[in-house]
Length: 188
Length: 369
Image (cartoon, rainbow over all chains, first blue to last red; front, side, top):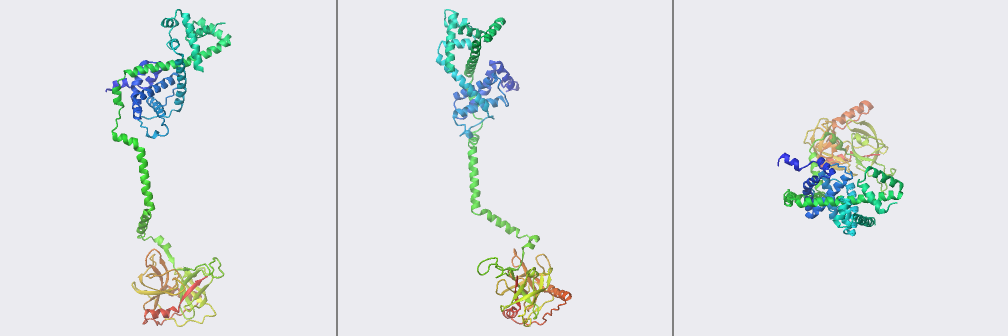
Protein backbone atom coordinates (compact mmCIF):
# COMPACT_ATOMS: atom_id res chain seq x y z
CA UNK A 1 0.00 0.00 0.00
CA UNK A 2 1.45 3.34 -1.00
CA UNK A 3 1.71 6.23 1.32
CA UNK A 4 -0.95 8.27 -0.44
CA UNK A 5 -3.48 5.50 -0.32
CA UNK A 6 -2.79 5.03 3.32
CA UNK A 7 -3.46 8.69 3.95
CA UNK A 8 -6.76 8.37 2.17
CA UNK A 9 -8.02 5.45 4.14
CA UNK A 10 -6.54 6.33 7.47
CA UNK A 11 -7.95 9.74 8.23
CA UNK A 12 -6.45 11.74 11.03
CA UNK A 13 -8.32 12.54 14.20
CA UNK A 14 -8.75 16.22 13.45
CA UNK A 15 -10.48 15.74 10.14
CA UNK A 16 -12.62 12.95 11.55
CA UNK A 17 -13.80 15.08 14.46
CA UNK A 18 -14.46 17.94 12.08
CA UNK A 19 -16.50 15.64 9.87
CA UNK A 20 -18.54 14.36 12.79
CA UNK A 21 -19.33 17.91 13.85
CA UNK A 22 -20.58 18.72 10.39
CA UNK A 23 -22.65 15.53 10.30
CA UNK A 24 -20.79 14.30 7.23
CA UNK A 25 -22.01 10.85 6.33
CA UNK A 26 -18.72 9.97 4.63
CA UNK A 27 -16.97 10.60 7.89
CA UNK A 28 -19.15 8.03 9.58
CA UNK A 29 -18.25 5.54 6.90
CA UNK A 30 -14.55 6.19 7.32
CA UNK A 31 -14.85 6.00 11.07
CA UNK A 32 -16.70 2.74 10.87
CA UNK A 33 -14.28 1.13 8.48
CA UNK A 34 -11.28 2.38 10.37
CA UNK A 35 -12.23 1.33 13.85
CA UNK A 36 -14.75 -1.44 13.60
CA UNK A 37 -12.11 -4.14 13.02
CA UNK A 38 -10.43 -3.10 16.24
CA UNK A 39 -13.65 -3.51 18.20
CA UNK A 40 -14.41 -6.78 16.45
CA UNK A 41 -11.03 -8.10 17.34
CA UNK A 42 -11.30 -7.13 20.97
CA UNK A 43 -14.78 -8.49 21.48
CA UNK A 44 -14.30 -11.73 19.60
CA UNK A 45 -11.08 -12.40 21.46
CA UNK A 46 -12.81 -11.92 24.73
CA UNK A 47 -15.59 -14.45 24.31
CA UNK A 48 -17.94 -12.28 22.27
CA UNK A 49 -19.66 -12.78 18.90
CA UNK A 50 -19.60 -10.59 15.79
CA UNK A 51 -23.04 -9.26 16.68
CA UNK A 52 -21.80 -8.33 20.13
CA UNK A 53 -18.94 -6.48 18.50
CA UNK A 54 -21.35 -4.61 16.23
CA UNK A 55 -23.54 -3.58 19.15
CA UNK A 56 -20.64 -2.49 21.25
CA UNK A 57 -18.97 -0.57 18.48
CA UNK A 58 -22.17 1.21 17.45
CA UNK A 59 -22.81 2.20 21.02
CA UNK A 60 -19.33 3.62 21.20
CA UNK A 61 -19.87 5.64 18.00
CA UNK A 62 -23.20 6.89 19.30
CA UNK A 63 -21.48 8.00 22.49
CA UNK A 64 -18.81 9.75 20.47
CA UNK A 65 -21.38 11.57 18.32
CA UNK A 66 -23.41 12.45 21.36
CA UNK A 67 -20.39 13.84 23.16
CA UNK A 68 -19.40 15.89 20.16
CA UNK A 69 -22.96 17.06 19.54
CA UNK A 70 -23.21 18.32 23.10
CA UNK A 71 -19.70 19.76 22.75
CA UNK A 72 -18.62 17.77 25.75
CA UNK A 73 -15.81 15.84 24.18
CA UNK A 74 -12.50 16.67 25.78
CA UNK A 75 -10.26 14.35 23.89
CA UNK A 76 -6.99 13.92 25.70
CA UNK A 77 -5.89 10.87 23.73
CA UNK A 78 -6.11 9.48 20.25
CA UNK A 79 -9.58 8.94 18.86
CA UNK A 80 -8.64 5.30 18.42
CA UNK A 81 -7.80 4.95 22.10
CA UNK A 82 -11.00 6.71 23.08
CA UNK A 83 -13.17 4.41 21.00
CA UNK A 84 -11.26 1.37 22.11
CA UNK A 85 -11.61 2.33 25.74
CA UNK A 86 -15.35 2.81 25.42
CA UNK A 87 -15.72 -0.53 23.65
CA UNK A 88 -13.61 -2.22 26.25
CA UNK A 89 -15.57 -0.70 29.09
CA UNK A 90 -18.93 -1.57 27.58
CA UNK A 91 -17.86 -5.10 26.82
CA UNK A 92 -16.43 -5.76 30.23
CA UNK A 93 -19.62 -4.48 31.75
CA UNK A 94 -21.65 -6.73 29.54
CA UNK A 95 -19.47 -9.67 30.48
CA UNK A 96 -20.07 -8.84 34.10
CA UNK A 97 -16.44 -9.59 34.73
CA UNK A 98 -15.15 -6.15 35.18
CA UNK A 99 -13.72 -6.66 38.57
CA UNK A 100 -13.08 -10.33 38.85
CA UNK A 101 -11.46 -11.29 35.60
CA UNK A 102 -10.12 -8.07 34.20
CA UNK A 103 -6.64 -9.54 34.55
CA UNK A 104 -7.38 -12.11 31.90
CA UNK A 105 -8.74 -9.66 29.34
CA UNK A 106 -6.82 -9.81 26.13
CA UNK A 107 -5.97 -6.28 25.05
CA UNK A 108 -4.79 -5.03 21.70
CA UNK A 109 -4.58 -1.32 22.30
CA UNK A 110 -3.91 1.09 25.09
CA UNK A 111 -6.97 2.10 27.01
CA UNK A 112 -7.84 4.96 29.31
CA UNK A 113 -10.23 5.12 32.25
CA UNK A 114 -13.51 6.78 31.27
CA UNK A 115 -15.54 7.45 34.36
CA UNK A 116 -17.31 10.62 33.18
CA UNK A 117 -18.07 9.27 29.72
CA UNK A 118 -19.54 6.06 31.06
CA UNK A 119 -21.80 7.90 33.49
CA UNK A 120 -22.88 10.22 30.71
CA UNK A 121 -23.61 7.28 28.44
CA UNK A 122 -25.68 5.56 31.07
CA UNK A 123 -27.75 8.70 31.55
CA UNK A 124 -28.24 9.04 27.80
CA UNK A 125 -29.09 5.40 27.44
CA UNK A 126 -31.76 5.75 30.08
CA UNK A 127 -33.36 8.68 28.23
CA UNK A 128 -33.14 6.87 24.93
CA UNK A 129 -34.72 3.70 26.19
CA UNK A 130 -37.48 5.65 27.90
CA UNK A 131 -38.25 7.44 24.66
CA UNK A 132 -38.01 4.22 22.71
CA UNK A 133 -40.40 2.47 25.10
CA UNK A 134 -42.80 5.39 24.93
CA UNK A 135 -42.69 5.33 21.15
CA UNK A 136 -43.38 1.65 21.07
CA UNK A 137 -46.38 1.97 23.33
CA UNK A 138 -47.62 4.88 21.27
CA UNK A 139 -47.97 2.62 18.27
CA UNK A 140 -48.77 3.47 14.67
CA UNK A 141 -49.57 5.79 13.03
CA UNK A 142 -48.76 8.19 15.85
CA UNK A 143 -45.15 7.10 15.98
CA UNK A 144 -44.55 7.72 12.32
CA UNK A 145 -46.42 10.99 12.28
CA UNK A 146 -44.35 12.40 15.12
CA UNK A 147 -41.09 11.04 13.70
CA UNK A 148 -41.85 12.44 10.28
CA UNK A 149 -42.72 15.83 11.68
CA UNK A 150 -40.17 16.28 14.44
CA UNK A 151 -37.26 14.15 13.27
CA UNK A 152 -37.45 14.12 9.50
CA UNK A 153 -38.88 17.63 9.37
CA UNK A 154 -41.67 16.77 6.93
CA UNK A 155 -44.37 19.40 6.39
CA UNK A 156 -47.87 18.76 7.68
CA UNK A 157 -49.09 18.80 4.10
CA UNK A 158 -46.83 15.88 3.18
CA UNK A 159 -47.77 14.01 6.32
CA UNK A 160 -51.41 14.52 5.61
CA UNK A 161 -50.92 13.09 2.12
CA UNK A 162 -48.79 10.24 3.31
CA UNK A 163 -51.27 9.04 5.90
CA UNK A 164 -54.31 9.81 3.79
CA UNK A 165 -55.94 12.46 5.95
CA UNK A 166 -58.73 14.38 4.32
CA UNK A 167 -57.34 17.72 5.39
CA UNK A 168 -54.17 19.15 6.91
CA UNK A 169 -56.19 20.27 9.90
CA UNK A 170 -57.24 16.72 10.59
CA UNK A 171 -53.60 15.67 10.41
CA UNK A 172 -52.64 18.49 12.76
CA UNK A 173 -55.24 17.47 15.28
CA UNK A 174 -54.07 13.89 15.06
CA UNK A 175 -50.47 14.97 15.52
CA UNK A 176 -51.41 17.05 18.54
CA UNK A 177 -53.20 14.12 20.16
CA UNK A 178 -50.26 11.85 19.43
CA UNK A 179 -47.83 14.33 20.93
CA UNK A 180 -49.87 14.69 24.10
CA UNK A 181 -49.99 10.94 24.49
CA UNK A 182 -46.30 10.56 23.90
CA UNK A 183 -45.50 13.24 26.49
CA UNK A 184 -47.69 11.47 28.97
CA UNK A 185 -46.01 8.15 28.28
CA UNK A 186 -42.54 9.61 28.41
CA UNK A 187 -42.87 11.65 31.57
CA UNK A 188 -44.60 8.88 33.49
CA UNK B 1 -56.35 33.09 24.22
CA UNK B 2 -55.36 30.26 21.96
CA UNK B 3 -56.05 26.60 22.46
CA UNK B 4 -53.20 24.32 23.47
CA UNK B 5 -53.12 22.76 20.05
CA UNK B 6 -52.93 26.07 18.32
CA UNK B 7 -50.25 27.32 20.60
CA UNK B 8 -48.09 24.20 20.12
CA UNK B 9 -48.38 24.48 16.36
CA UNK B 10 -47.31 28.06 16.63
CA UNK B 11 -44.44 27.02 18.96
CA UNK B 12 -43.38 24.28 16.54
CA UNK B 13 -43.26 26.76 13.72
CA UNK B 14 -41.26 29.13 15.93
CA UNK B 15 -38.80 26.44 17.05
CA UNK B 16 -38.32 25.19 13.51
CA UNK B 17 -37.62 28.74 12.40
CA UNK B 18 -40.53 28.86 9.97
CA UNK B 19 -41.88 32.17 11.18
CA UNK B 20 -41.07 35.54 9.65
CA UNK B 21 -39.26 38.08 11.78
CA UNK B 22 -42.43 39.93 12.57
CA UNK B 23 -44.22 36.73 13.54
CA UNK B 24 -41.29 35.74 15.74
CA UNK B 25 -41.48 38.99 17.68
CA UNK B 26 -45.21 38.53 18.01
CA UNK B 27 -44.73 35.00 19.34
CA UNK B 28 -42.12 36.09 21.86
CA UNK B 29 -44.29 38.93 23.07
CA UNK B 30 -47.21 36.55 23.46
CA UNK B 31 -45.05 34.20 25.56
CA UNK B 32 -43.80 37.04 27.71
CA UNK B 33 -47.34 38.28 28.32
CA UNK B 34 -48.77 34.83 29.07
CA UNK B 35 -47.01 32.95 31.86
CA UNK B 36 -48.88 29.78 30.99
CA UNK B 37 -47.62 29.92 27.44
CA UNK B 38 -44.11 30.49 28.76
CA UNK B 39 -44.09 27.23 30.80
CA UNK B 40 -45.74 25.38 27.94
CA UNK B 41 -43.02 26.51 25.61
CA UNK B 42 -40.24 25.45 27.98
CA UNK B 43 -41.78 22.04 28.54
CA UNK B 44 -42.25 21.54 24.84
CA UNK B 45 -38.74 22.65 24.09
CA UNK B 46 -37.14 20.20 26.54
CA UNK B 47 -39.35 17.37 25.34
CA UNK B 48 -38.36 18.08 21.79
CA UNK B 49 -34.75 17.91 22.87
CA UNK B 50 -35.22 14.35 24.10
CA UNK B 51 -37.13 13.52 20.99
CA UNK B 52 -34.36 15.03 18.90
CA UNK B 53 -31.70 13.00 20.64
CA UNK B 54 -33.77 9.92 20.16
CA UNK B 55 -34.14 10.73 16.53
CA UNK B 56 -30.44 11.40 16.09
CA UNK B 57 -29.61 8.11 17.65
CA UNK B 58 -32.08 6.15 15.60
CA UNK B 59 -30.77 7.92 12.53
CA UNK B 60 -27.19 7.21 13.36
CA UNK B 61 -27.95 3.60 14.08
CA UNK B 62 -29.70 3.23 10.76
CA UNK B 63 -26.80 4.79 8.96
CA UNK B 64 -24.36 2.54 10.72
CA UNK B 65 -26.43 -0.52 9.98
CA UNK B 66 -26.34 0.48 6.34
CA UNK B 67 -22.57 0.88 6.46
CA UNK B 68 -22.25 -2.37 8.33
CA UNK B 69 -24.23 -4.18 5.65
CA UNK B 70 -21.85 -2.84 3.01
CA UNK B 71 -18.76 -4.03 4.82
CA UNK B 72 -16.70 -6.83 3.45
CA UNK B 73 -16.86 -8.89 6.60
CA UNK B 74 -14.50 -11.57 5.35
CA UNK B 75 -11.70 -9.11 4.92
CA UNK B 76 -12.32 -7.54 8.30
CA UNK B 77 -12.49 -10.92 9.98
CA UNK B 78 -9.14 -11.73 8.48
CA UNK B 79 -7.60 -8.53 9.77
CA UNK B 80 -9.14 -9.05 13.18
CA UNK B 81 -7.60 -12.46 13.44
CA UNK B 82 -4.75 -12.75 15.87
CA UNK B 83 -1.45 -11.72 14.35
CA UNK B 84 0.51 -13.32 17.08
CA UNK B 85 1.41 -16.99 17.01
CA UNK B 86 -0.44 -19.35 19.31
CA UNK B 87 2.43 -19.61 21.77
CA UNK B 88 2.57 -15.85 22.20
CA UNK B 89 -1.16 -15.63 22.75
CA UNK B 90 -1.10 -18.39 25.30
CA UNK B 91 1.83 -16.71 27.01
CA UNK B 92 -0.05 -13.40 27.10
CA UNK B 93 -3.08 -15.06 28.53
CA UNK B 94 -1.29 -17.02 31.24
CA UNK B 95 1.56 -14.59 31.87
CA UNK B 96 0.19 -13.54 35.24
CA UNK B 97 -0.51 -17.09 36.32
CA UNK B 98 2.97 -18.25 35.43
CA UNK B 99 4.54 -15.29 37.18
CA UNK B 100 2.63 -16.11 40.34
CA UNK B 101 3.62 -19.76 40.03
CA UNK B 102 7.24 -18.81 39.54
CA UNK B 103 7.32 -16.57 42.57
CA UNK B 104 5.69 -19.24 44.70
CA UNK B 105 8.31 -21.71 43.50
CA UNK B 106 11.12 -19.29 44.31
CA UNK B 107 9.69 -18.63 47.73
CA UNK B 108 9.40 -22.35 48.36
CA UNK B 109 12.98 -22.99 47.26
CA UNK B 110 14.47 -20.30 49.40
CA UNK B 111 12.39 -20.96 52.46
CA UNK B 112 13.33 -24.64 52.23
CA UNK B 113 16.99 -23.78 51.88
CA UNK B 114 16.71 -21.45 54.79
CA UNK B 115 14.87 -23.96 56.96
CA UNK B 116 17.38 -26.69 56.23
CA UNK B 117 20.21 -24.43 57.28
CA UNK B 118 21.75 -24.09 53.88
CA UNK B 119 22.58 -20.42 54.37
CA UNK B 120 24.19 -20.97 57.76
CA UNK B 121 26.50 -23.54 56.20
CA UNK B 122 27.51 -21.07 53.60
CA UNK B 123 28.29 -18.54 56.27
CA UNK B 124 30.45 -21.02 58.19
CA UNK B 125 32.52 -21.70 55.13
CA UNK B 126 33.17 -18.05 54.56
CA UNK B 127 34.22 -17.47 58.14
CA UNK B 128 36.64 -20.38 57.89
CA UNK B 129 38.06 -18.79 54.84
CA UNK B 130 38.52 -15.39 56.39
CA UNK B 131 40.21 -16.96 59.39
CA UNK B 132 43.09 -17.78 57.08
CA UNK B 133 44.03 -14.13 56.90
CA UNK B 134 46.31 -12.60 59.44
CA UNK B 135 44.31 -9.64 60.60
CA UNK B 136 46.66 -7.77 62.89
CA UNK B 137 44.06 -5.42 64.32
CA UNK B 138 41.64 -8.05 65.30
CA UNK B 139 44.31 -10.38 66.61
CA UNK B 140 45.18 -7.78 69.20
CA UNK B 141 41.64 -7.86 70.42
CA UNK B 142 41.44 -11.59 70.25
CA UNK B 143 44.38 -12.04 72.51
CA UNK B 144 42.81 -12.92 75.79
CA UNK B 145 44.53 -12.27 79.02
CA UNK B 146 44.63 -15.55 80.83
CA UNK B 147 42.94 -14.23 83.90
CA UNK B 148 40.26 -16.34 85.39
CA UNK B 149 37.14 -14.57 86.48
CA UNK B 150 35.85 -16.10 89.65
CA UNK B 151 32.30 -17.19 89.87
CA UNK B 152 30.60 -14.28 91.49
CA UNK B 153 27.88 -16.43 92.93
CA UNK B 154 28.39 -17.33 96.55
CA UNK B 155 27.52 -20.69 98.09
CA UNK B 156 23.82 -19.78 98.49
CA UNK B 157 23.65 -19.05 94.83
CA UNK B 158 22.90 -15.39 95.49
CA UNK B 159 24.78 -12.87 93.52
CA UNK B 160 26.30 -9.49 94.26
CA UNK B 161 27.05 -10.29 97.89
CA UNK B 162 30.67 -9.23 97.74
CA UNK B 163 31.15 -9.44 101.47
CA UNK B 164 31.17 -13.22 101.47
CA UNK B 165 33.12 -14.05 98.37
CA UNK B 166 34.46 -10.90 96.80
CA UNK B 167 37.33 -12.47 94.86
CA UNK B 168 37.34 -11.00 91.37
CA UNK B 169 40.17 -12.61 89.51
CA UNK B 170 42.35 -15.60 89.84
CA UNK B 171 45.71 -16.11 88.25
CA UNK B 172 49.07 -17.68 88.92
CA UNK B 173 52.31 -16.37 90.34
CA UNK B 174 55.58 -17.93 91.39
CA UNK B 175 58.28 -17.24 93.88
CA UNK B 176 61.38 -15.24 92.97
CA UNK B 177 63.11 -15.73 96.25
CA UNK B 178 62.63 -17.50 99.59
CA UNK B 179 61.84 -14.28 101.45
CA UNK B 180 58.47 -13.91 99.79
CA UNK B 181 58.93 -12.05 96.51
CA UNK B 182 56.66 -13.32 93.74
CA UNK B 183 56.11 -12.46 90.14
CA UNK B 184 52.85 -12.35 88.17
CA UNK B 185 51.38 -10.31 85.32
CA UNK B 186 50.65 -6.61 85.47
CA UNK B 187 47.17 -7.23 84.00
CA UNK B 188 46.40 -9.54 86.92
CA UNK B 189 46.96 -7.03 89.68
CA UNK B 190 46.10 -3.89 87.77
CA UNK B 191 43.59 -1.86 89.76
CA UNK B 192 43.43 -4.47 92.47
CA UNK B 193 42.14 -3.64 95.94
CA UNK B 194 43.99 -6.40 97.69
CA UNK B 195 45.89 -9.45 96.60
CA UNK B 196 46.21 -12.79 98.30
CA UNK B 197 48.29 -15.72 97.24
CA UNK B 198 47.49 -19.29 98.10
CA UNK B 199 50.21 -21.91 98.12
CA UNK B 200 50.01 -25.56 97.32
CA UNK B 201 49.46 -26.34 101.01
CA UNK B 202 46.32 -24.24 100.98
CA UNK B 203 47.74 -21.46 103.12
CA UNK B 204 46.77 -17.93 102.03
CA UNK B 205 48.97 -14.91 102.47
CA UNK B 206 48.26 -11.27 101.98
CA UNK B 207 50.61 -9.64 99.51
CA UNK B 208 51.42 -6.20 98.29
CA UNK B 209 52.62 -4.98 94.96
CA UNK B 210 56.15 -3.70 95.08
CA UNK B 211 56.64 -3.05 91.41
CA UNK B 212 54.57 -2.92 88.27
CA UNK B 213 55.77 -2.76 84.70
CA UNK B 214 52.96 -2.24 82.26
CA UNK B 215 55.05 -2.43 79.11
CA UNK B 216 56.45 -5.84 80.04
CA UNK B 217 53.17 -6.91 81.68
CA UNK B 218 55.08 -7.81 84.85
CA UNK B 219 54.18 -7.22 88.48
CA UNK B 220 56.40 -8.02 91.49
CA UNK B 221 54.55 -8.91 94.65
CA UNK B 222 55.77 -9.32 98.19
CA UNK B 223 54.08 -11.50 100.80
CA UNK B 224 53.15 -9.15 103.60
CA UNK B 225 51.57 -11.41 106.13
CA UNK B 226 52.50 -12.12 109.78
CA UNK B 227 51.81 -15.81 109.28
CA UNK B 228 54.41 -16.06 106.56
CA UNK B 229 57.52 -17.84 107.66
CA UNK B 230 59.51 -17.86 104.47
CA UNK B 231 59.88 -20.44 101.78
CA UNK B 232 62.29 -23.25 101.31
CA UNK B 233 65.21 -22.76 98.96
CA UNK B 234 64.08 -21.97 95.41
CA UNK B 235 64.78 -25.04 93.25
CA UNK B 236 64.75 -23.35 89.83
CA UNK B 237 66.96 -20.78 88.25
CA UNK B 238 66.20 -17.97 85.80
CA UNK B 239 67.61 -18.18 82.32
CA UNK B 240 69.20 -14.95 81.20
CA UNK B 241 69.68 -15.77 77.55
CA UNK B 242 67.02 -16.66 75.07
CA UNK B 243 65.85 -20.17 74.42
CA UNK B 244 65.60 -21.85 71.03
CA UNK B 245 62.53 -22.67 69.07
CA UNK B 246 61.49 -26.24 69.51
CA UNK B 247 62.60 -26.49 73.09
CA UNK B 248 60.28 -28.48 75.33
CA UNK B 249 58.67 -26.39 78.06
CA UNK B 250 56.07 -26.86 80.72
CA UNK B 251 54.03 -24.70 83.04
CA UNK B 252 52.05 -25.01 86.21
CA UNK B 253 49.10 -22.78 86.77
CA UNK B 254 45.74 -22.36 88.41
CA UNK B 255 43.03 -22.31 85.77
CA UNK B 256 40.98 -23.89 88.56
CA UNK B 257 41.52 -24.28 92.27
CA UNK B 258 43.97 -27.12 91.76
CA UNK B 259 47.40 -26.73 90.15
CA UNK B 260 47.34 -27.85 86.53
CA UNK B 261 50.38 -28.98 84.60
CA UNK B 262 50.71 -28.12 80.92
CA UNK B 263 53.39 -29.20 78.46
CA UNK B 264 54.43 -27.77 75.14
CA UNK B 265 57.24 -26.30 73.10
CA UNK B 266 58.57 -22.93 72.07
CA UNK B 267 57.13 -22.14 68.68
CA UNK B 268 58.38 -18.62 67.99
CA UNK B 269 60.74 -15.99 69.29
CA UNK B 270 58.08 -13.31 69.15
CA UNK B 271 54.42 -12.93 69.91
CA UNK B 272 51.46 -12.40 67.55
CA UNK B 273 52.36 -8.81 66.87
CA UNK B 274 55.99 -9.57 66.22
CA UNK B 275 56.85 -8.22 69.67
CA UNK B 276 60.08 -9.82 70.91
CA UNK B 277 59.20 -9.34 74.58
CA UNK B 278 57.41 -12.67 74.49
CA UNK B 279 57.81 -16.14 73.12
CA UNK B 280 55.05 -17.88 71.30
CA UNK B 281 54.49 -21.17 73.00
CA UNK B 282 52.44 -24.05 71.81
CA UNK B 283 50.98 -25.13 75.10
CA UNK B 284 47.47 -25.65 76.47
CA UNK B 285 46.65 -22.73 78.72
CA UNK B 286 43.39 -21.34 80.01
CA UNK B 287 42.13 -18.33 81.91
CA UNK B 288 43.93 -18.54 85.25
CA UNK B 289 47.26 -19.54 83.76
CA UNK B 290 48.45 -15.94 83.55
CA UNK B 291 51.59 -15.34 85.56
CA UNK B 292 52.56 -18.99 85.61
CA UNK B 293 56.20 -20.00 85.15
CA UNK B 294 57.38 -21.36 81.83
CA UNK B 295 60.07 -23.89 82.62
CA UNK B 296 62.44 -25.72 80.32
CA UNK B 297 63.68 -29.30 80.68
CA UNK B 298 66.58 -28.31 82.89
CA UNK B 299 64.45 -26.48 85.39
CA UNK B 300 65.24 -23.00 84.16
CA UNK B 301 62.47 -20.43 84.20
CA UNK B 302 62.44 -19.03 80.68
CA UNK B 303 59.23 -17.05 80.74
CA UNK B 304 56.01 -15.96 82.38
CA UNK B 305 52.76 -17.07 80.74
CA UNK B 306 50.66 -14.02 79.86
CA UNK B 307 48.04 -14.81 77.26
CA UNK B 308 46.90 -16.65 74.18
CA UNK B 309 45.40 -16.05 70.83
CA UNK B 310 41.85 -17.31 70.95
CA UNK B 311 41.33 -18.06 67.30
CA UNK B 312 44.62 -19.80 66.63
CA UNK B 313 45.52 -23.26 67.87
CA UNK B 314 48.35 -23.56 70.37
CA UNK B 315 49.35 -19.94 70.29
CA UNK B 316 50.08 -18.91 73.85
CA UNK B 317 52.53 -16.22 74.82
CA UNK B 318 55.07 -15.95 77.61
CA UNK B 319 57.19 -12.96 78.62
CA UNK B 320 60.87 -13.73 78.29
CA UNK B 321 62.80 -13.98 81.56
CA UNK B 322 65.22 -11.35 80.28
CA UNK B 323 62.52 -8.74 80.81
CA UNK B 324 61.75 -10.04 84.27
CA UNK B 325 65.38 -9.47 85.12
CA UNK B 326 65.20 -5.97 83.66
CA UNK B 327 62.21 -5.25 85.83
CA UNK B 328 64.04 -6.49 88.87
CA UNK B 329 66.97 -4.21 88.05
CA UNK B 330 64.60 -1.32 87.75
CA UNK B 331 63.04 -2.23 91.04
CA UNK B 332 66.48 -2.27 92.66
CA UNK B 333 67.35 1.10 91.12
CA UNK B 334 64.10 2.88 91.94
CA UNK B 335 62.98 1.32 95.17
CA UNK B 336 66.33 0.11 96.40
CA UNK B 337 64.95 -3.32 96.98
CA UNK B 338 67.40 -6.00 95.97
CA UNK B 339 65.91 -9.38 95.17
CA UNK B 340 68.55 -12.06 95.13
CA UNK B 341 67.67 -14.73 92.61
CA UNK B 342 68.62 -18.32 93.11
CA UNK B 343 71.71 -19.42 91.16
CA UNK B 344 71.74 -23.12 91.97
CA UNK B 345 69.48 -25.40 90.03
CA UNK B 346 68.36 -28.63 91.71
CA UNK B 347 66.04 -29.80 88.96
CA UNK B 348 68.34 -30.58 86.08
CA UNK B 349 68.64 -34.30 86.62
CA UNK B 350 65.15 -35.03 87.84
CA UNK B 351 62.38 -36.43 85.74
CA UNK B 352 59.32 -34.35 85.02
CA UNK B 353 57.14 -35.59 87.85
CA UNK B 354 59.85 -34.91 90.39
CA UNK B 355 60.57 -31.52 88.91
CA UNK B 356 56.91 -30.63 89.19
CA UNK B 357 56.72 -31.85 92.72
CA UNK B 358 59.57 -29.56 93.67
CA UNK B 359 58.36 -26.55 91.73
CA UNK B 360 54.76 -26.91 92.87
CA UNK B 361 55.47 -25.50 96.32
CA UNK B 362 56.69 -22.26 94.76
CA UNK B 363 53.78 -21.67 92.46
CA UNK B 364 50.87 -19.75 93.97
CA UNK B 365 47.33 -19.01 93.07
CA UNK B 366 46.94 -15.24 92.98
CA UNK B 367 43.55 -14.02 94.13
CA UNK B 368 42.72 -10.44 93.36
CA UNK B 369 39.93 -8.57 95.13
